Image (cartoon, rainbow, N blue to C red; front, side):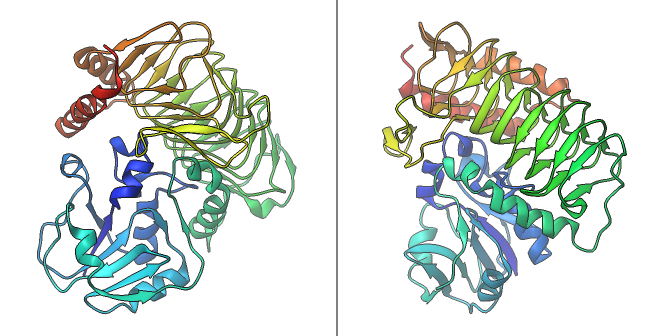
Length: 399
């Protein structure tokens, strides 16, 4: 039976701009992406049911075998998996109107109408608690719970590499796991409030102060004298310095210098210039509002702490100041003094004084140069995805 992770239409819109360039299941939450969690726990490769423009990069299911379709916004746990496995063909697992999973007899479904088809199946009520993401801010809000779960999943039955004696440990040693090839020297690690995971070939440089939970994924690096409050995740090949508080970097992104970043989500291939800072708390201590692509306007997050959400391939210059609840689209280039707008559309160029369209060809040059620094380059599928985003977000750009 094929495993297919699907995007609910509503969820995709609520999770923009992060889902402009990926299915919901490829959002990183904790140590792993949601897709990686399902594949590990079910022991099989997954396919994707999402918008057509993403299908070339994120493989769709092409055969007519029976399918187990699972909501890519839902995080797996043992009880949920047990209930899903008990589903029969043409049954759907539901919780408070949310479609969690369903099974088909044969054939693959179209993204445009699969939800209506699935809701015609015999519903099975799921009455237990589970974790899912519905908005961008859920990613940092739920990161601690997800990180703890991933830590237990990844480290179960395994032995950590030894912690160097040059470090100062506060808290239980069993909450520290160091993968082969990782380096941790002359740092202060506090595992009392959560686990600290250091991935393959990752590095915590000298003088860093870390309060868990922290996930430092493969080939990621904390620069010298970094200050990190959990729950924070640095995805693969990310580099970060300065002060971080409850931040998630998806992968291949950098904040290599001083500056504060808190309660934020940063996509892939982003770069934050030296002394970039964001506000994560309003002066009046009120709830933070953010721009919603689904609503086409700002909405109340219900949170007092909420920082920056930045889509893939976006960059900002030195000394950039982001206000509370700022949303930056894909391939934006932000610079200049004062606070830029709280909503910056994809492929924008400028800052507080003006924003213009960042031409597609020029933005692709920047993306290509950054990827080449890591020995990679955009695929044809990547270029098509970026071009689609350029066209879709044009309505928000002024020129």
